[in-house]
Length: 397
Ligand SMILES: *Cc1c(COP(=O)(O)O)cnc(C)c1O
Image 1: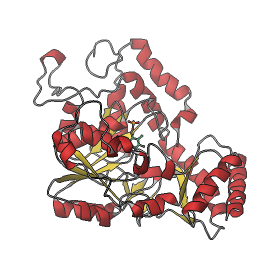
Image 2: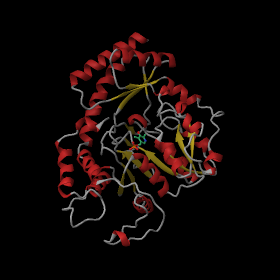
Image 3: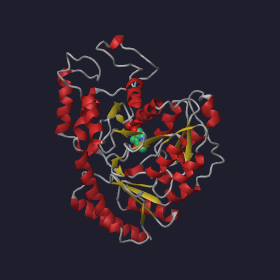
Image 4: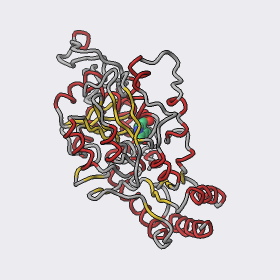
């Protein structure tokens, strides 16, 4: 997955353009910037690649989720449905708005189970946020129907699946809004950065203003601009945007390398009948950033994870025991450990995690192993790795 593996001359050249003028901010200073608008250019390139009318570049993927929800009018006490298997950023962004994250089970896609989503919809629900974990997507068709029926926003977190698609549409562009992260370990990187994509004019305007203190960006005097509503500062710097501009041009090259490496590993593992691969919803195409599969039991998955480590096979994750990606280790959320007092709406609205039953999620995540696909492997290295993985799995079984 990581674009940082390929940081090179193209990235240096883009950053040098910015260093040559010293204009590090995306807004204003037009006379000094020698025609360099790296953030704007990256927005244009991203929107084009993702087939949306607009992209808003911001400081991180976490910021992008917050801004997307804010742009859709999500606020205090509103409920946002999200999966038990994600990154902590999902509920952080919801909480930042005083809104309430409602966790629901995943299924064998490793993403939101539409059935559990439908059960969780209440009169307070405002948005459903599928998270396309580890390179593959939720059943977006089913989720869209639920959202349309209940008048909810469908916000796709495509931070880990940029370049994948569903029903011929790039991931992130299928719902009302989509978000990406360009942090240092994502498929393409800005060092730090994120983006929102959408076709909805109102969200475009709201995201543009909200991410820059509410600035309406009208006229050429920043100090005289209006502020139609409250915002925040989630701006990206030109230096970060410059790196991303070089990387987006390489996205399709990165994806084809990922697919090639993924396919070599998968072919070998497919010969082992006990290994079952994660389900990709019909109409979906992965971005191949991870190869994820299920072992016959939790015990065997744990055993395999240790065996991979012992055999020197790195980059394979057992999410069930992970601090950042699975609800079991989120005691800061479930025990409500915040620095200051949380909004009353949040305290009142959070699920009682001593009573929730996520055994369906435990069933799938407990048996899952996800292996990161690297870009920098040579073909020989991938083949050797595939062989070794196959041997270790057969041994464990
Ligand atoms: C990385 C990531 C984020 C957050 O992105 P940052 O740019 O690191 O803030 C959000 N959701 C998912 C699924 C991610 O993998």
